[in-house]
Image 1: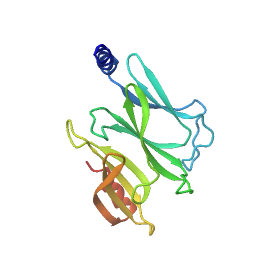
Image 2: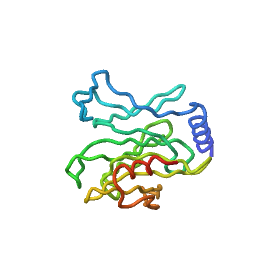
Image 3: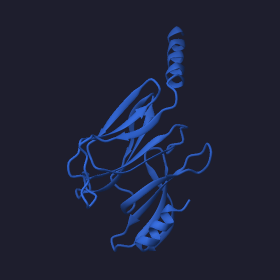
Image 4: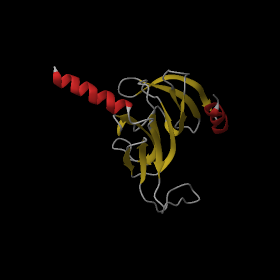
Amino acid sequence: MKRRGIWLGAWIWATGCFGQAVFHLEVGPDSATTSAGRFAARKATQLVLQTDTMRDEWPLPYPVYRFCTGDVDGDGSEDALVGVVKATRYYPEEGRRLFIFKNFHGRVRPLWMGSRLGGILHDFRFVSSGEGTTGVVRSLEATTDQRFVVAEYRWDHFGLAFVRFLAKNVDAEEGRRIFEQD
């Protein structure tokens, strides 16, 4: 019984005394981007979780094209969404991927290291559904015939589950316009 009380006290202290946790990216000073948007020479990018009293880092050894935060899994804390360019085991061609990280007791931990959504990922962003609710991940994806779709995904226990299409079979300009709407 005494051990449970000690553990509960430590958990309350650990979750309540570190202040507001904030995710941000840090890029090494030698970073450079070519005119084509590719990283030429760079030090590793790091995802950083910072509070008043702690700091935790997760190295990202891939080029990063997008970063945003939001409560993806509905647990009440901000998660980090990081877009990286890399190949995967099942998709060996380099492409844009989405990684989601969470704050687990003051530590950066992967929530989802996605290799692919429904189509060829061009961009994503977090769209909040309102105060105190889980939002959705909105994506701009290409199809194999170079048309575009705008889709929304919601967290579903172990990954992102498709919710709905906002647009299908549109050109890049129209897809971008719909993707950026609130």
